[in-house]
Image (tube, rainbow, N blue to C red; front, side, top):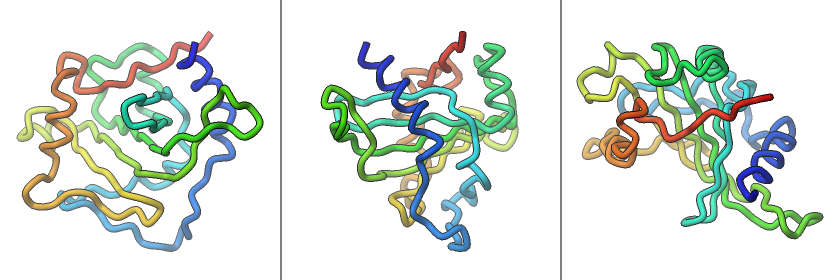
Length: 170
């Protein structure tokens, strides 16, 4: 029931969610040269999730290729060209609905880029990137370009490295 309520809240809030950033501010690519996808703020919602361990909520977005794959249940494997985005906020209690949660402080935006050839060497077929805070500072250093992402996603290796299960719309 909590997951359903989170999804209802997330889907209803999504059109109003924006970042307090100036679109003219240049966001640096990560160390592998991956860039924050242009116009990701206009992408459609694939799913939502709530992490009880760190009290954060996520809206999972996809580019057009990801949306088409998720709507047709073609996600294992996801097609090349897929980009999945996860926008993460600390959660708070909704002011006008005390039994509901709502987004509070923005934590980060993370993206997975599917390209079986380009990212073959890392063993996943995915490129991984994260930008921290409203400043969108690239995450990672030369000692850990994407190994922490891959290690975290290893339990879902059999699901093409993706935790997110797209919601099935009626």
